[in-house]
Image (cartoon, rainbow, N blue to C red; front, side, top):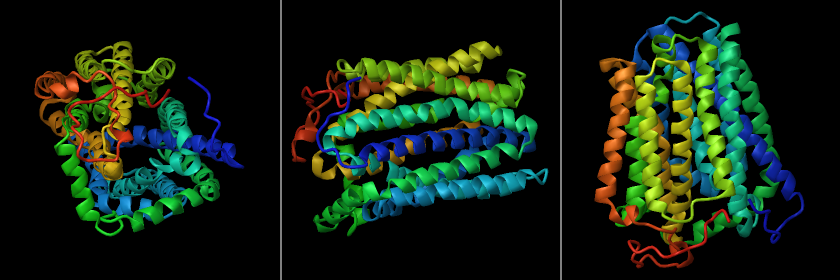
Length: 442
């Protein structure tokens, strides 16, 4: 990967960058540690796969209900402060779950109520931390920082599940306490960024307030405008909805507590290792993409990656061997990282400049919510069919989706390079005819 561009540096900027990367690592570690044992605890209490799905729905509902609020708040206020408050909220959730776990609980109801608070806190964090790099560095350094921000969170996806599983074996309340403390450290790191992010954040807020039809004045109309742009742009519609349906059908991660205990015969430590496999696969692929990013045959690579994700899901559902399940999880997570990389580059580049923020808000809702909706779908099918058959059906459905999209969205399938739409401030472009562009991570 090339070094950072030198233009636009400001005093203290390197410190702010390190704080952001540290905060991303802390929040990823704490969230995955808590999420790993949360599903296990729910399953041990109720023994119903459906409750694992309802756990995902409890996180999704606040995201859906707050979508118009979180975007407006992110555009109006200091995003670093928003992230600080949101992560502190997640720390309180961790301590609340620890207190409940210490009572030897026999009901999952209070857990769902606490998780709703977690979903609300994360919805504000998601809306604020996405654009935060652009508040810290000059525009020419944003792609460079985006790549490193993504990599910074990946070690947490490995460390968090292992830490959570080991601590759960010692005491069920311990992983929640540690997660709360790590969240608090992450909140402190976000807080140190506020002085560096404030000036650019205020400029963005001023531009938003001055723009006609801005989100600050008409949030519902602007959200609908983002939907209209996506609907009339086959590349955007195909890429965003492909992710939604693939993860909706292939979201096997939610059933891992049941798979680990009922099919693989392992404990909380084994479950932590299985969750860590997803981080390992993601890290390996992201390092490869940093060295050699996807630049040609973008559409076909995207479809192939989602296809491999479906195949990995199938293998996970079929196997009863721990090692095979570990490898399958690493493979499907690596394939998902390729598709995420392509979509995160494609969506802004295929969006007209003047509506890019609204398109991003809508895309974030659908792409971000696909994990929680996929968890709910997996929980329902797992309750009806059992965890193994449910994962098999999900993998087969994902492969069917890939085939259908290859036929239904030829503009996406035949996309060779990333479109250069972002360089032209006009919504009247024919977005079905992409033109060559430099890769955003070059």
